[in-house]
Length: 426
Image (cartoon, rainbow, N blue to C red; front, side, top):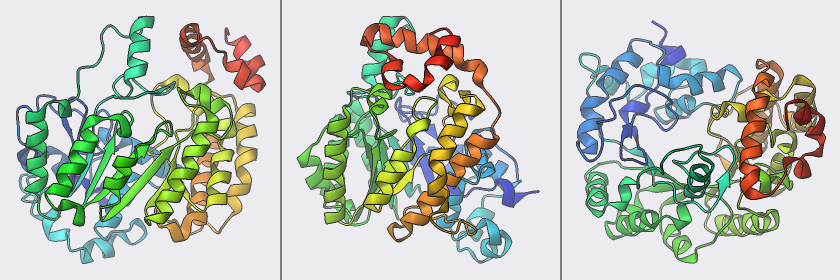
């Protein structure tokens, strides 16, 4: 049994509700076979959490490598801080002292109580809340379930047959059921919201307002991400009432190709809103970070994100290495192109000593160490990952289809890729 390698405490205090109202055991989990009938329409959130995650908990307690945990395993393979490591830190467990810190964790009796049948008497304290696909951007690496604009575009191109269903939180009955679950959960501590674009999603404001009305804003920390295209002062005013706010600002690079990848945004507007959010974040003592998803198109200019972060003394964070769409992975680039990106990232790998891994990457006092550590993980990933350049024709096919609607050309933004893309059919 290898608990150190695979154990994660997340299913004892965290869960996720997806856009269609289905439940998942982790915000980082991917492709795990949980019954999709387990939905807020058919089972109460707390009942599902306490009973229906039994198989997951038993698997983790027996040292199994769950299929849904592959993204975290991949991050750890390349020395990138994983979601598992973050969750372990919340229960006082560190990988480098796993056995001793597990023995001293106050959560050990709680884990042990689940050994017989996998159930728990705990309530979820930490949520990821997916609010649907309301979005005014159409990022190339995104999917229809996360962007209404991209969904409409892909339906027009014949890439999907129908639009995704409306989000669970558009139904006032389901929203009330969810809010009741939050109110009923002792020790509720953190709610992380994603869209879509949260600032234009009606349910985001409704939930914030309800939390304030219930007095939960005094104990709950809020996390959310913005796409740097809009501003809503009334939402900012509500957020300022919460105990703590973790603000993520999505940007792929501070280069014109950001407009191509994050279609719908304009770099000048992006920069203006970045500065505005940073000012507000520092005014209210929020935890702020740049959120990036390096792709085959943006990785060459990824260093501009680190430079901006360094100049503004903030961190850079990505949930994981991009998995889908496969043709958008930065590993689709042949090694000679990867090396150009690596060379630009190298200065940031020397900011601090990285011998000791920083797990609490949101600590603003250690932003330089975090930047250095994150840059090292991408250099490692680009240097050692298998060549996937066989996916270039799929990438080119997708770009040509989207460009037929958008009337733009990737080569106007990335002329250094012309030879590579021409040989792949562009």
